[in-house]
Amino acid sequence: MGIKLDMVGIVVQDMKKSLDFYRVLGLEIPERANTEMHVEVAQDGLRLAFDTVEVAKGVYGSWDEPTGHRIELAFLCDSADALNALYEKLMHHCYVGHREPWDAFWGQRYAIVTDPDGNLISLFA
Image (cartoon, rainbow, N blue to C red; front, side):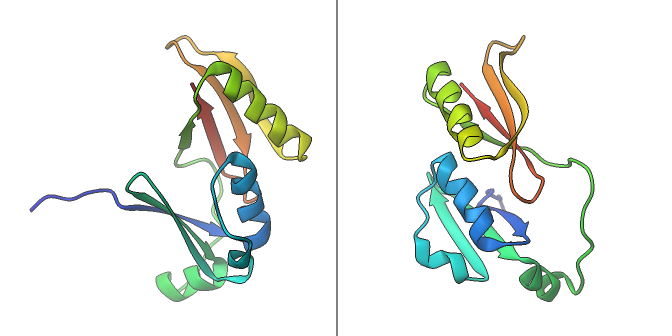
């Protein structure tokens, strides 16, 4: 029996704030999702899900606010120029940059931003 990664879930404090960030990032998420407790966005066969803390408590039986960086979400940009423009767009919307765009030693253009829940989100080209 094989397995396939199908969904990555993010627990969010404020659904609208989180969805707004991911919209600026470029994901197509309907505005009506702002008031939902569970939201899924399908992208090329993988789902990115957003759950409120209340949903997480129901699923896990409890919820302890995490600390530290444990997992990376990395979004592929069309080009280095597209990455630079996306980073500037996020900064224009007052989101937090963790590392400004740079040319990484492994050959990619790279930047890291922080989503509203403190997750580090990588952008690369």
